[in-house]
Image (cartoon, rainbow, N blue to C red; front, top):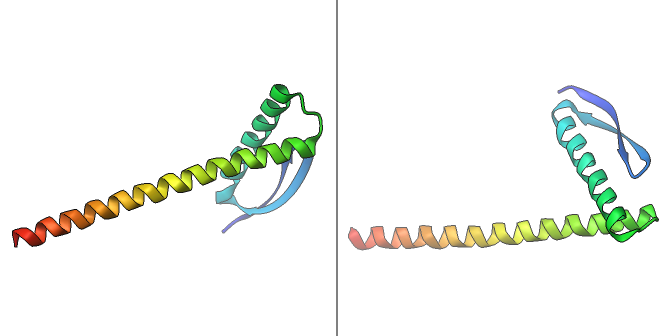
Amino acid sequence: MEKLNIKIPISNRLYPMYISASEEKTIRLSASRIQKMLKSLKDRYSVKDDQDLLAMCALQLCVKIEKLESSYMETNKRVIMDIENINKNIKEIF
């Protein structure tokens, strides 16, 4: 697997990374999304401190992750219940 040395800009700093080539697109897109979030937060709240902006960005991203995980768990519960009901119906037939 090919490894790349790249530099990712986040909040006026460059972060060197040593990554696999297959991860490059995802990492660059993620960094771009972070930059857009930082700009949006800066414009919306008139916050000047980069650390505050990064903290707000981290919080928003974690909230999204929590919501997705919660939704995933609920979906899994429904799928398991549906499978159990299907199995029960099959057993009743036979």
